[in-house]
Image (tube, rainbow, N blue to C red; front, side):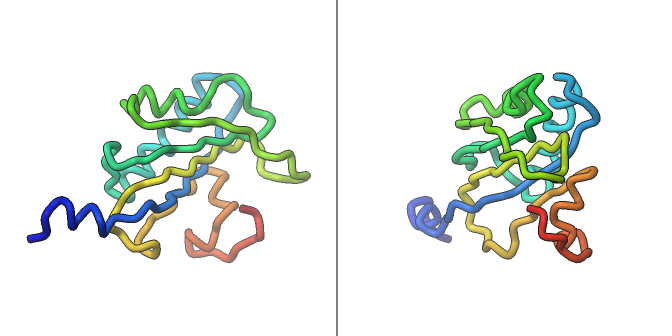
Length: 137
């Protein structure tokens, strides 16, 4: 069995993507959609929050009622560095969209990471859902 020191040396920081949409620019809707997305990312990858280096949340310009990172705090991510930012306003981009990039210390290979796209955000990466990519990331 590998020592903890050797095991730590085999871990890499991997990026785990998630995205979802919410119905409206209402704080409770944004927090509920964000919590659903975070929980889905955690469940799909078996993430332990002690292994999360940081998480970056972004929202489209039409969402400004609340910081989505608050949902992660409400889920117990009290020691994880969190940051929120706004997406650039690309014409015809998917609106009411919340995205996350979780930086996770893991021994999983990049190919084994499960990225989670929920609701209307599935259109952003249909290639990860068995469809064909539309060029919207």
